[in-house]
Length: 439
Ligand SMILES: *Cc1c(COP(=O)(O)O)cnc(C)c1O
Image (cartoon, rainbow, N blue to C red):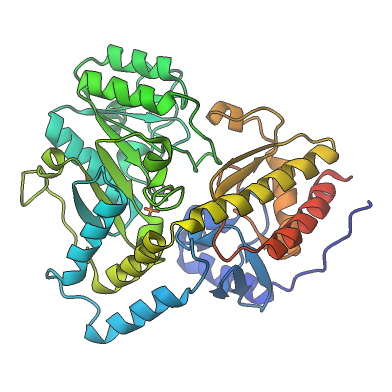
């Protein structure tokens, strides 16, 4: 072994908390991927974070590439967001009645994402996606939806459908508790395969209410749309009267101020938002064409409601973060530059070690796939060596680099990342790649 070994981490407080947690919380966590099952070992419990750095309950520090799975695009605890939250707190935490900030937030979202003519705030990305398809069904009077293998739209029943054996096969539930009836209304197709989508639409003529996708996928690892793919989907939806929904919960306000739809110049009928929109608070939103959104109660008959929706503290955080992004458009070019350095550097290190791994990147999102095959869809992603990825993840963790604890996740870069920190990451990457492969 020529790689330098990492110092042992003291994780005793994390381990003790995890033992306690398992007695009270299913699997010890409130969201499954946090349990580290895909990479082995125990989860690290966090105490605090500032800028690019996390500090755990044992006092270890980590350079963070998760950034709360996207929301912390300005790094952790940015003054501009913290100040807005602090200023909002004394006026009470919730009213269950309309507030000025909800109007300001709606105006801001519409400015940044012009395809949105009307918008409804909810409390999570899951809620946004569940609501969007209900509205699309109400609007079209049709039952079925098309989704794509490897795309994640939260844990709503309709979205937890396994990839069937091809586009025309009826779905089967991916999770116990999802009924076959629900599964029958979800059609799954391979991402980046326009012809399969066309066939699925033809085979379900006048029955498809909505087509929902991540325009750039983050949830099978980072996968970009191939040339012409999004425009092709746009054309198919227009032709067949299908509501095109871009799930921009991850990509919204991240790949550009106006999300992937701005970057690729495609106008969806509806958009779902989350993550960055709340500045770290639980916020989601769905919006789109006025004629579609006017189906939502009380303007229309499609019911959707929320006790804490438009919460005054959450909107304070969201407005502060979105306003900052709106007023600093230059930060997107800088995020892209620094993430390109990370992606290129990683690709080069893997190549030098004879591994030729695929590194996908769009803007400030990237993934290192432990496969030499180009990754354009879920099938490609699944050729990755997940055992080696797990060893790499643990080697990085022990060097103070906090990656997503699974191969099929995107990594996120914040404005707190500096060139010096990239150098630090690349050194750890080289050592960890060698350690993971016994080189
Ligand atoms: C995270 C995510 C969701 C779900 O959002 P939650 O806030 O976790 O419910 C939906 N769609 C995409 C694309 C996501 O990345």
